[in-house]
Length: 184
Ligand SMILES: [Zn+2]
Image 1: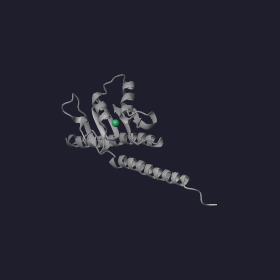
Image 2: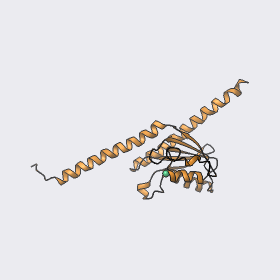
Image 3: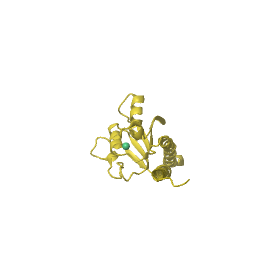
Image 4: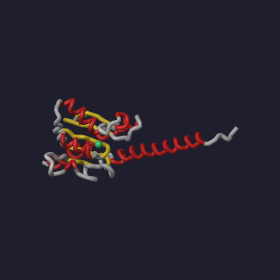
């Protein structure tokens, strides 16, 4: 029957749709980071088709490098499932995980990682290192790149553009305050 022939295409399409849906949820988390002045990086963990944990970057707010979005998500997911093993889970992250997060992903046995955009300065999902798929470790994750890449890149670009603008304005203000007032 030709329905059998169709199946792989349909399942790929539905995976794509599902990935987009959950990456949108990760982007929502990134927006939360922007709202508190943090670099916008968001993540969610999905298990059996449901989001079981959400997280966003709070490094400056919490004053710890451990406050990355993925680590926050892993903590919450473990609390929720009552298990350090997150087998069968998929982690969606707007930015490619760093060495710490990629390490935690592999340590927690997450099966699949869906990445929005790559990180040229700290990416350990294949850009600088591929911790997620090193065959020498006892666990490897399936990795999918480029889901909502434009949106995930745009939110970071917007943040850094605004930051540069704010810094410029601050410098200008400081210069004005330092200058003797000549106007009457
Ligand atoms: Zn990280």
